Length: 259
Image 1 (cartoon, rainbow, N blue to C red):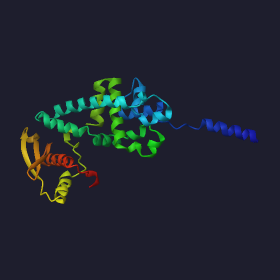
Image 2: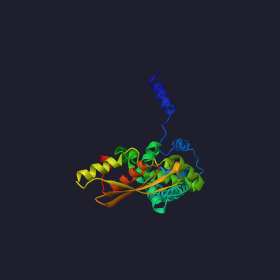
Image 3: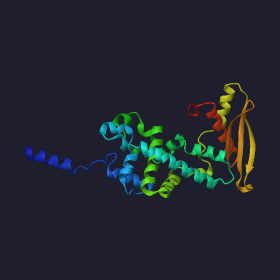
Image 4: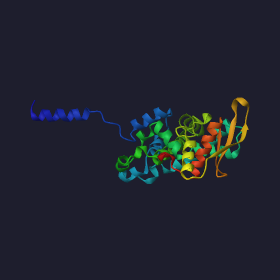
């Protein structure tokens, strides 16, 4: 084969080589739709939800196409859905208890955990610099993107579709209280902290027990040096004590991730 023929063949093979899906491509968006089990009527909403503001400086697009506005909306929708679910799951709990549970369920840390679990970072559109610095796994970016997806689903399919997504991917473990950071023993963290400060030992007190014997809800407070520093709710004393310890750890400003 002559030189001209070789060049022509090489060019033809290059054209036939399958193209990898780009972030934000229709193929990538379709893959995400398959993951979450919802097909958008307006895919532009999904494209915006997955678009971090860092990339618009590379593409020259308007800032309005990034996910910040959808994040704002999704945050409010998430609060409503989780509040409704907690109200339904814990009819015996008082307003203050429900508020504390909701704060944990929709915390940035929990949303980042859920985002990583579903592989959300794979689908995000980031600038090259943001990607190099680990943006696909960064807590704040995952949290914002997950809220933006909720906002996009709400606008595209309404509250019931948003509720289905939240209950499937975010609040699926509320009824078992697994939202209370089961991977950490906050009682041990709190004990280590107060012993290190030489301020005695944490004291746990049962405030009340609600509900029938087979489905009790325990309300517990924890005290350090006679002062209440945390409050917890759980289906068992152990769960409630762990939650109270978690609140106390936050109260003292302890970074439990480093312990």
